Amino acid sequence: METLTEPLCDWCSAGWAMVPLRIVLGVIFVHAGYGKLRRGIGGFSLWLGEVGIPLPRVAAPVVAALEVVGGLALVVGLFTSWVAIPLAVSMLVATWVNAVKLRLPFAGNENAQGYELDILILAALLALMIGGAGPISADAILGG
Image 1 (tube, rainbow, N blue to C red):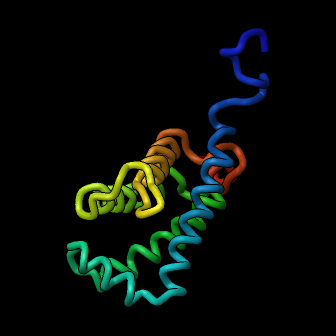
Image 2 (image 1 turned 180 degrees about the horizontal axis):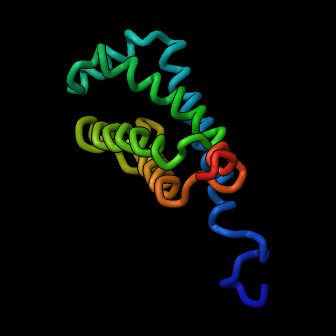
Image 3 (image 1 turned 60 degrees about the horizontal axis):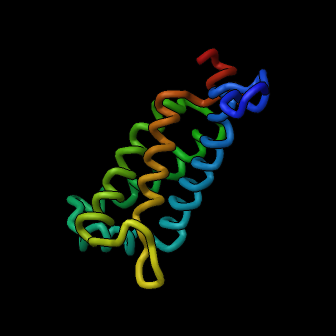
């Protein structure tokens, strides 16, 4: 490293940066989806209906399954770029609900959560769509 603008190491690359990003995102999604299932999908379905999501009784289990299965796929790095697409769509809807329907503040406070983390997760998913899973992944083993 000759200057502050160069990577910290010669063997490091943007591909390696995808590994911790996708694993952490995967854990976040598995936790979120499992939480919906553990608390009972009915409550999530009712909430989706209250905020105006069409077909909430269909959407709720689909979203929970997407989060669990998609999150597990991210953790192992399987079909990463493709799995990130429906997860990003889900996060777009979550951001829209929080920002437009619920009018939550951008940054959370003691009275309400914010939607800044929704946007951060969306940006991280975009990075995975573009950058892929990284070198330590099922995608790398499969030749992707």
